Amino acid sequence: MSESEDRILAARVLGGEKNAFGALAAKHRDAMYSFALRMLGDREQAHDAAQETFIRAYTRLNTFDQSRRFRSWLFAIAANICTDLLRRRGKPTTSLDDGPPIGVPAGDEASPSDAVEKRDLQRTVAAALQHLGPAERTVVILKHIHGFTYEEISEMTDMPVGTAKSHAHRARRKLAELLQHVERDDAR
Amino acid sequence: MNCDQIALKIDSYLDGVLSEQESHSLTQHVATCSHCSARFAALLRAVAVLEDLPDLPAPDELVPDVLQNLPAYRPGAIFNISAGSIARVEWALGLSGAAGTAAIIVGLAWVVRQVPAWWDSLGAVGRVLAGLAVKGAVGAGESAAIVAATCGEPLMYGLLIDVALLAGLVLVLTAWRKRWSPKSVVLTL
Image 1: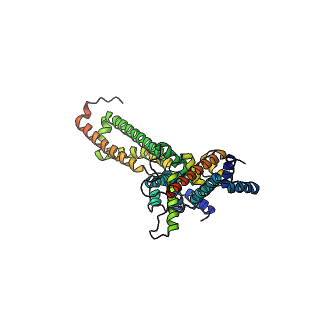
Image 2: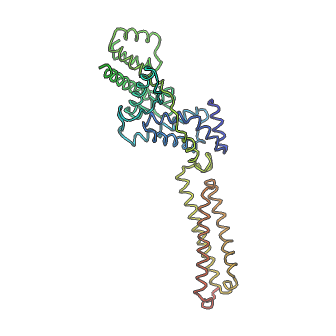
Image 3: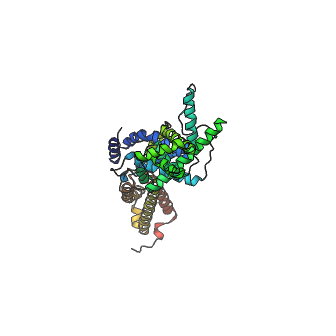
């Protein structure tokens, strides 16, 4: 479904068709849930944050600027909700070795070894995201997982473009250092 | 270029804003510097892993949960305010309406009670009907105000309060009539 179809659905919701919002939510639910899960590292909180994102979008739909992408607007709301939750929560509660993998797709038991290795890498990086600061995490996820530009991220998060870049650079370096560290451990 | 300068170039390269010439000097340095080479490779791998992470399937109940929890009012309504504020407005309107209704009915009953002829001529059914008429007028205004502000869901609470008030009023009037003799009241009107 295209961006213009998002706008049509949004217009129908504003016209009183509540069910059209169900179509909008169904279209964006996986993206919102994935973003929230990678931001928060907790499935239950991710579900709640994604739900809150859609409810807030519904109640503020009349403030949606039609010149913007609906997807960006939705991500801006989700980023705001997740950042607030992270700030309230304080320090990260998970370590790289804690519990089942968060933020990676479920694996196939019979996967070939390269797929297993790829999944391990994904698991390591997804877990490492939990150890970044809220702003670094937000920017790096929006930039490199969801493909937004720095300009879009700046608009979504109300931070200057230069600040968004700095956060992304710092986050990437931290993740790279962690990967190097893990690889050194594996090599021993 | 030294290694610190190369680190900045790597950032620009990963952001996709490095010119062809700068990219060339970057790769030349990386090819001859093991430290930068390892750092560059790790950064490329980190970005590649991030960009390869797919969307995860949301729980099936997410969208039904969202639809079930959407507020009753429409986005873009005249008073487009939060659910908490809506609830406060509803209760304020409902309670003030109920209080106003009670005051008017009790006031009317008191006036009627002061005039023995009016009181005696008003049978039990007439008293209930009079109460309903007053209640209806006030309740209609109250309901309209609630509908205008919130699109209507909390009317049920208002109606429940109204029914309770009406029942209480009938009880009070009945008890009042039994305890006081109309003849003991001085006609002052």
